[in-house]
Length: 232
Image (cartoon, rainbow, N blue to C red; front, top):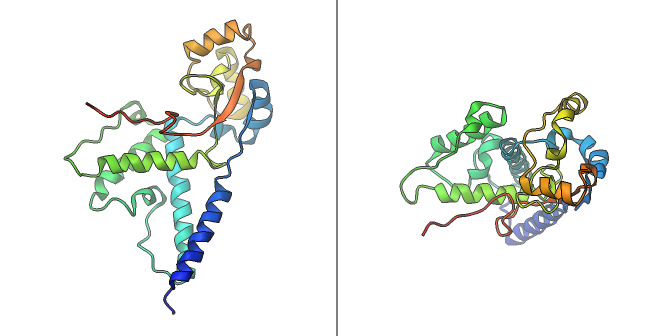
């Protein structure tokens, strides 16, 4: 089989860029809570109601499946590829080496937490010597989450103007949450923050159906959903 040429690699990279823009051509959305419940929620209630652990676990699956598909395409084009791994470990496959056991523990943490285990109540602490891969692991997670939020599978919605970008489902009163569960087969977890509660009373006179909602995108630079604290 002929070895891929430089031109082949350039064309393949161009195709990758084109495919990336198509996959990440995010659809912006803005409206009030009534429009959100009517148009966005029914399409996939489970995704809208995901916890942060479930969101990270879904990101692992999405990223891994995409990488495996890319490797399959590369094999068909004659390019050598690395060994296969399960979806969740694909994110670390090309950047971190020799720490398979700790990486598996990180993956298992998100898997168990996303399934509702009490593990999700604990903080995930990465402890080890310098240059052990801790910072790289976190950077990979943040980059993948940013990318995932720009896809349709990773769409996130938040109360517009909320300082903590909380889920619009927090607007649903507790007296209606049992009915919500019966209707959409998912639970609402969380409380509306004090800031939005004050806005609800002062700006909308308690009418939560008028509260503005928009699609949000994870951004470390914009301090949305992920962030970095550098100790001094």
